[in-house]
Amino acid sequence: MKAATRILGVGSPAGDDRAGWAAAGAIRASAWYRSRAASVTVACLDRPGPALLAAMHGATQVVLIDAIRSGAAAGTVRRVDLDRIAMQESAGVSSHGFGLAETLALGQALGMLPPQLTLFGVEAGDANGGEGLSAAVRAALPALVRRVQASVAGSDDWSG
Image 1: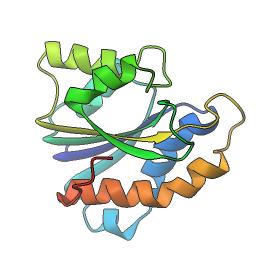
Image 2: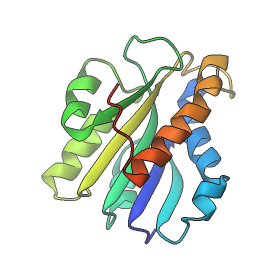
Image 3: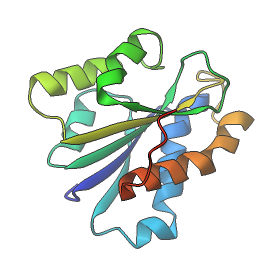
């Protein structure tokens, strides 16, 4: 991955935990992405960890997309900046064992984080069941994709 901007969908094959993958796939299939393919890379990763740090290496801007658990209604889209990720995840945001906070803390300690890092999360309704997304998460994907695209373009000022 050589592009300066990387959009990384994080997830697993279980239920709503596929949300990051689904959003990344929708972005990759979009005309928006095709017009930016020289400067933007989109990839899917299986859960956070060392592979995430490697995927971010050399990028100036990284947007992570993941399923989250914060107690909000399923399908709620949230933007969480780096300085809030550890606090949010300790309150139950990540749906992963070795979560995003631990991976990013390791990256920060090793000086491996990009200058600009943003997480977009979609509240999972069912992170463990089935192979498909819940109706609420599926319905949230178009707005999530637009938010990620706006963030990459520098026009996303919503911090909800």
